Image (cartoon, rainbow, N blue to C red):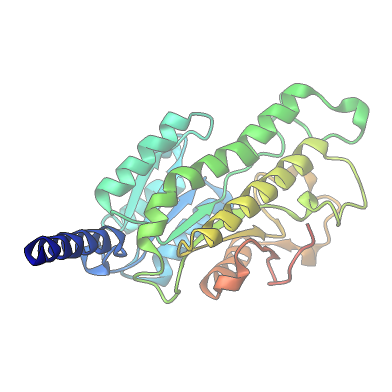
Length: 290
């Protein structure tokens, strides 16, 4: 009877040790890179390209993964790859194909094993002969709604979904933050509470959807105690190809350069705290109402 009890105790102890090992957090010593690993989705030009540039310049040991539909066609990325051949990885990622997103996640896992920062920078507002911001309800078309929603909301949340395991592993390791960060570029026009002008139905609603999807992901991260903070950022009106057709009525002092806007946004990212999870910030750090 005593031997049986002892054997049971030993078996129970072994089971407890095995269980504790399976629950043990991922050791930072097993990560492949000591410095942070950042990913910028939508990096071919504009704000996304500027994020890649500043992330590489501000940390001489950090690694950056730049993704877009066709990296080979981006002269800006080619120039940065020439400057930072060992710290910049270029990957194709088509937001309309989940298999493409999965392939990018697999490549990042194989090369780096983790992520510390994900920036969702892609977005569409207008495409000649295809998509224009609506000035009236009677100009609304289903095709415009669906295309804008797919690129501005569905694609980014699927990127978050597939990069989530890599962000959980990375946390804040190799950075000055305590957590990993997901920062998706939204827009003030996506705020329902701040909508006083109307119009731009497709773009507004796609950014509102991105806000809700990201907020919901943030709630799940918190509930599961994942070391990830998920925020949304309004970059201001930035002098890029996206805003160029609509800059005529923008005061000069409110039209920002890419350099200025990204510098401000990176400052928010670098100083983010756990209690900022699920918040929506403007470029100046002020919270925007939902």
